[in-house]
Length: 483
Ligand code: C9U
Image (cartoon, rainbow, N blue to C red; front, top):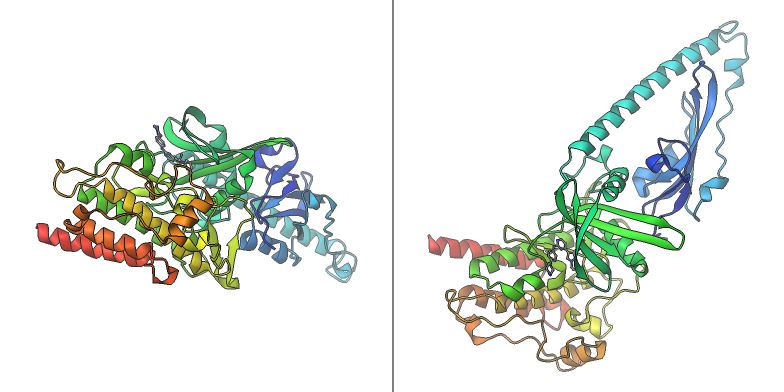
């Protein structure tokens, strides 16, 4: 069973508790575990005492494997027990240390009066000293890295210092970042909540503040951003996620890179593109989507992800003319090991205007991951159409079409599911391709691609990788012609 939200766990011991855990609890990542560990350590006077710690562990290998492997008693006994059934489930865990073998401590034959215990004590002391030294070194290294890291973009950390869940900063650093944020101004509002321009250590960042009703979107988006190998120049750069508050009141934040040009939807309202910038933008968007859709095999591989809400408002325009895909609150992952589609429990659906015909017809097979990728490709076709309208093919003086949302002439401004179904499924309508596009090579090439993306039959649609390759080829060919 997948758990879509974090667990609250009892937290004991400064090393395992966030910020010294004033309230004695911590929250795991979705899918994480609560644990209790008991360990024999030496106190100040050299006596062996049992130390009990408790707290949160990350999901799967990096967390649960600890629970399994530590059951094996070693020279310096430590036992970890984990649970995930309910919040604070670790309160009732009572891991017991293995009984010491009687012949070691009591048998006079084992080295004479006090010989073995003294040896054991000396060995334990060495192990404890080495462990303390290793812990101190690790802590020092983590602090140095956290202090040095620039906010935008934070370099992906090697596995030892990461949160244990893939790309992104360690969770404690993320919490610290969230505490240091100063909100500057609100730059967008939507059904999800609000987006703010904020400052972090003097640099501009974007902060998405989720409505409490959008908890599932926050969890999913945070989870997706922290997926291994998710970082890509055409995917919005994740910095940190945090949740704070008590009982009835919670604030969920997502902190990312800030792009002053805003969304592609904002940008196309005022800017007219030349064919070069159109191609750069189109290529970058499809590169981001191809990366998202791709699975990378291996122990530190990346699962294939489908977005499910591709639209111009969810694409940011970067200063270098490339774009970055944002908003993963609805995304689904393909878990290859289990041949399973991981769909988070979320009542949210995609944007009606951009929904593929099979989604509107409620015929999308949710057990088939490729079906989600094909639906993304349909939405991408509509975004390409929005961009082409704003591209002047014959010099800046040439007229371009005014900015418009797809199907602007065919459905009302806030179309219902039924409006879209009637238009896209029953009447099988698609956005119009103006004659002027066909007279321009780049626009004609893109027109051809978008039609193959929004085909009524999902398997006939192009894949992101195919569109990316076609655009790459087109760009090299036209560059050669220009030289
Ligand atoms: C509202 C859609 N949206 C924009 C951003 C995000 N959502 C976002 C998504 N995930 C995490 C954090 C944020 C976003 N926006 C920017 N920059 C930006 C700059 C100017 C505007 C909007 C956004 N304007 C809107 C229209 N009025 C003038 C300012 N950067 C990163 C993410």
